[in-house]
Image (tube, rainbow, N blue to C red):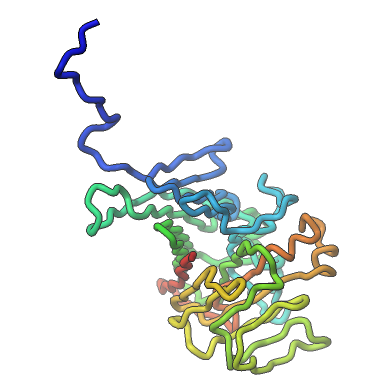
Length: 323
């Protein structure tokens, strides 16, 4: 066999093109997945537009999802990032939302996938897509008859999830499509995955007012100490961080930064962990000791109500950076 001195070099799959983010729709058109060229990925169910996975470039999962979570559209997903709209919890004294179930209908309605967009880093030539944005929409036509009767207003929601290299941006735009004014609350109910809740502390909530929803018979208001928050038992609090939305709220583990959350137009932060008793009392929370590996730190507008007149819009969001 003659060894030719001028062998042709191996051809690349797509000569001249930089790597692109891959977006796929799977599970009978029920799930949208996106993967960056560097390996970061997300998965979003059209049911509730609920994100059920966010992985870094090494494949490490950043979100906690219960092993008994229903992802078939039969009930709200226990874990990931469910969306709360137009009411946080229940509001029996608020006439417009009093007939709605816990946390409203956004997390239990089927959203439309509106498409994707990508951005390429201008500082790194040839590195491929730097981020990918997925857009989802919800309107009255997507709701069940029961939900439309319970909340008979004209509205439009656009929820955008942008996956970047080491960060995640979630944004919701709310528009009043009718002539009649209405009020709403909204929240991004993020379940963060941690290794050991006993080593977790949350910075950025120091010297801040909070509402403790576990005090009976009426939730009490208090001011947090000047040290980071540690989770030592069942926790369900609504914080109004003293530093405002732009000041980061940081989830630390073993003294090291794990996640940093910066909010835009979302003035409250809900901190929730069911602990042992709460986990046992929740049928779809599994494993029962899973509370040791999760913490909910939820950006929202839930203290009072946001009012939109006909034709008005409102936007809020968060940027989560993973260390």
